[in-house]
Image (cartoon, rainbow, N blue to C red; front, top):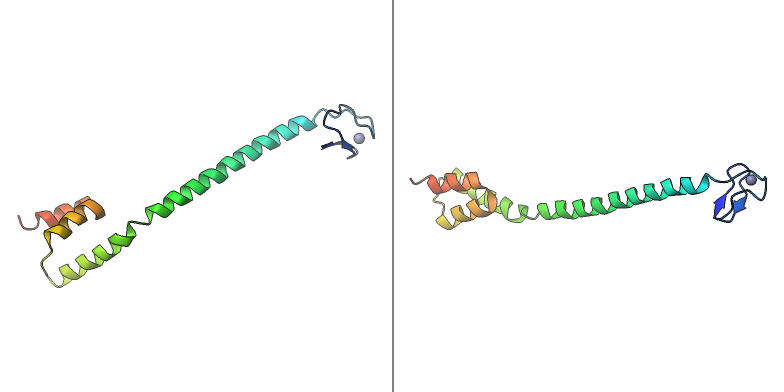
Length: 108
Ligand SMILES: [Zn+2]
């Protein structure tokens, strides 16, 4: 359904002239086209936002092991205790390349 832009009378979609006031009603389809373009853009933005939010959620998962491993290393270093080779390799693979390499090279 579209409406006359002058008098506001409800018109059938195929109408070219308003049955209420007689003015031409050619602008309506153009406006609805730009409106559907706007809807498409908003829908695209909505979907992208959902995808980004899900991926950002997955990016938080490494904190599950990085926090305990950091606490473990913090305590070991503070108490000057021995750090196992397994921990050093896990640190290199799952936490960070630089701390992993530094730990593996400490005995050399
Ligand atoms: Zn009218």
